[in-house]
Amino acid sequence: MSDDTVEFDLDAYLKRIGWEGERRADVGTLKAVHLAHMRGIPFENLEALGGGAPSLDPADLMAKLVHGRRGGYCYEHNTLFSLALEALGFRVEALLTARVVLGAETVESRPRTHMALLVEVPGESRPYLTDVGFGAIGALLEPVPLVAGVEFRDAGRRHRLVHVPHRGPLEMWVLEAHDSGLEGWVAQYAFTLEPFEKPDFEVINWHIATNPRSPFAQSLYVQHLSAERHLLLHGRLLTETRVDDGTVRERQVAEDEVEVRRLLEEEFGIVAPEGAVL
Image (cartoon, rainbow, N blue to C red):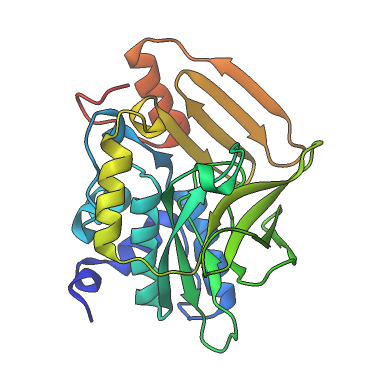
């Protein structure tokens, strides 16, 4: 057992995400805990917006995302989730870095800044792409097996993995989400199966949080998902997308900090710390 695992409290984590199922290392448990995490812990970038990089230390993640009324972004979410999976008996086969290509012209035009997980499930021939930290409406709700060209329906969303040509010796995988509008399949992020290590993510985390050109250092970005809706606050634009029919509603939020704090607490379940840049 690693020091990281010792600092992780599985009981407290499962209580935070509201999951009470049987603790088994199988596909059903992996999907259920993944979905519960997505709906239980919000996505937010308050540290980066204030000019600092959030800690990826297990004790700090427990204090912030589990015991505190806070959320985090991809490095925090997926680091915490990897600890939960290991405590449940899964093997995290690799920490992956991906290029977020949503809205990009080419795969190569974006750097590797996103963290995802490759998870081995006992008795399964293929590992599963697992990701509870992608702050977009095209994010996976449940893990999908690493197989190309097959459509998966994960808790109501539609995803598939495809291969695309690129320069390099390793195959390039792209996660695509289906847009029910006119766009059809939309690329979300691209990755190879080259494993990265925790020190790599310490560097990437610091870069994406503190680089003034990073979108997370420029404006507030908060997301919460429930069975009924996807709620996003980007800057002062609040967007609600209904799960049942895809209806989208938008409104501008007042610049008043008190109003923003109230909105974060009541709608997203986040208590912003004193001095937070909002």
